[in-house]
Structures are given as structure tokens and as C-alpha cells.
Image (cartoon, rainbow, N blue to C red; front, side):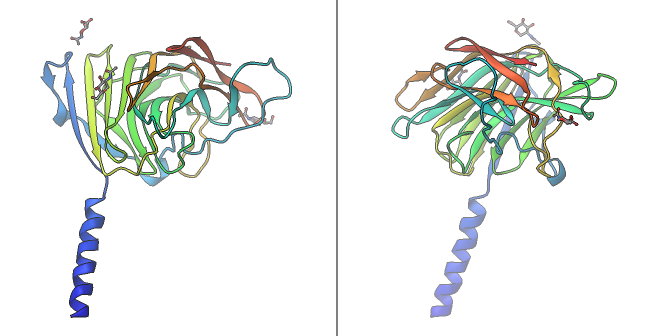
Length: 285
Ligand SMILES: *[C@@H]1O[C@H](CO)[C@@H](O)[C@H](O)[C@H]1NC(C)=O
Ligand SMILES: *[C@@H]1O[C@H](CO)[C@@H](O)[C@H](O)[C@H]1NC(C)=O
Ligand SMILES: *[C@@H]1O[C@H](CO)[C@@H](O)[C@H](O)[C@H]1NC(C)=O
């Protein structure tokens, strides 16, 4: 009898494990919603050697000894942009922004290829266990040629490149991240220049805290925990940046940490300049 119970227990645990695996459904259209192209998109799980770690290794750096005093400025070794906080009694449901697909030029004296990622996410800062994010990464090679690609990731799960989603450097893209529950969400990307939309509905993701929203440019790490060379880029605007909460509050970037990216030698290579509560620009330096 005991062995039967054990057997049943093991059996149901196996079922529970299988049911908890992350899963998702992709839908896509082009020509502003008129043509279904869901079958043309392929979500490519990045192999371990290329599993980019967007946002997951954020570490703060002390402020540089020189430099002007500013309000709510913080420094990071990989982030540049805005990180906003809510409270556990008013959790974040949605984070949204327009952003420009990074448009790059080579940074002199650095290895090539060079990269810049731009993304929107929920839970990049205080929540250590999960981060739901999506955006566009651009790479520039030795002759100045660029290629951009859209991606999403529910950290610590692997990131997926959204192959077949057309995006060029400088295109205007909306990124809309919704936490339907702590473990399910919907990611929607619209490339307004190309008239293409993709949405990914995800189930059984790692449990979110839903207490932060981020709008960021990133010098991310590869899977060997080596930071990729960071390119220079055209002004990268984030427009209509907002997070909404369970109580229906709309939070902008007022009061957010405005994060400057300081490289290993202490040089600020990107800093955000706030325009107003909903709009800021990340500037390459
Ligand atoms: C999509 O709609 C916008 C605005 O209505 C228009 O400017 C654009 O040309 C359209 N794009 C496509 C691919 O149909
Ligand atoms: C973002 O997506 C959610 C869920 O689909 C939707 O309710 C909301 O209106 C979208 N926000 C914007 C600004 O498009
Ligand atoms: C930091 O300085 C060293 C020594 O000058 C240089 O080789 C390296 O490329 C610099 N790193 C960055 C990211 O600029």
C-alpha cells in the first residue's frame, strides 16, 4: 500500500513538474493588423553561449568622485534609463513605452562587434527572482553595418529572439508588458514603421513580485558573464513611458531612479535626461 501511495505521489509530482514548465503562444500581424503572420515568426531560444542576460546582473556602482549633483541619480555598470518602484499593496500590472530600436556607430578603441539593447520590463530591480522583459538589441560590425532583432525573456528562463519580426535601427517600437498574474503575462511589440505587431502570451513563468518597472538601455552580459562591448548610439527616446497598477494608478518616471551607465573605468557612457513624467532620452557619451 505504501509503495502504491509513493508511486502515486511520484506520478503526480511528475505531472506537476511538467505542468509548471514555461509555455507560450505567439500571434502576429502585418499591414497594421490586416494580415496574420503568426506562422512566419519563429521564437529561437538562444543557445547557452549566446544566452544574453538582459538586466539580470544589474549592479550599482558608487557615484564618480567628480560630476554635478542631481536628484535621484544612481549609477550602474550595465543599465542606463529609468527604474520605478511600486509597493506590494499596489502591484504593477503593466509597463509600456515607445522606444527606438538602437541606431549604432562604433565606439573607438573597443572590440567589435558592439551592442546596445533597449527594453521595457517588470521587476528588474528589487525582485531578485524574476524579470519579465522585451525589447530590441542592435549589433554593429566592423564596416558599420547593423542588424537589429526583437526579443523577450522571462528571467531566469532563457531569452528568445523573435525571428521574422522586422525591425531596423531607428524604427519606433512600442513595448507593452502585462503581468496577467504573478506567473502569466502578455508581451506585445508593435513596430510602427513596419506596421507589424507580435504578441506573446506566456504561462507558468517564474513568480514575479510586480514591484518595479524599467525603461532601459543596457550593456548586457553574455552567458559567460562577460559584458559585451557597448557601441555609441543615436539619442534613444522612451516616450509615453508608464506603468499601471492593480489599483488603476498610472505611474510615470517622476520619482524613479534615473540610472547612468558607468563603464569599468569610471566613464559615464550613457545617461538619461528627463523631459517630463512620461518621456526621457538616453544619451550616448
Ligand atoms: C500603418 O498605419 C499607419 C498610420 O495609419 C500608416 O502611416 C502606415 O503606412 C501603415 N503601414 C502599413 C504597412 O500599412
Ligand atoms: C497593453 O496591453 C494590455 C493587455 O493586452 C492592454 O490592456 C493595454 O491597453 C495595452 N496598453 C497600451 C498602452 O497599449
Ligand atoms: C578601460 O581602460 C583600459 C586601459 O586603458 C582599456 O584597455 C579598456 O578598453 C577600457 N575599457 C573600456 C570599457 O573603455
